[in-house]
Length: 72
Image (cartoon, rainbow, N blue to C red):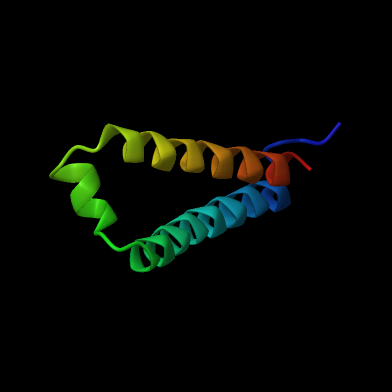
């Protein structure tokens, strides 16, 4: 069994987490540019709950992918 607090595993977890956050922000920016409206304004100002549900599901899916890649 691997030791989770091993410096190599901890560094890999941090790197994968940062990479996942960067990818999430990058994909959100690309999708924002591809859509005919401003996603951030739709989410915050207009409080579009359907769009918020889609973005939340996307974030959860990416989190699952990151967790799977960390655990191997």
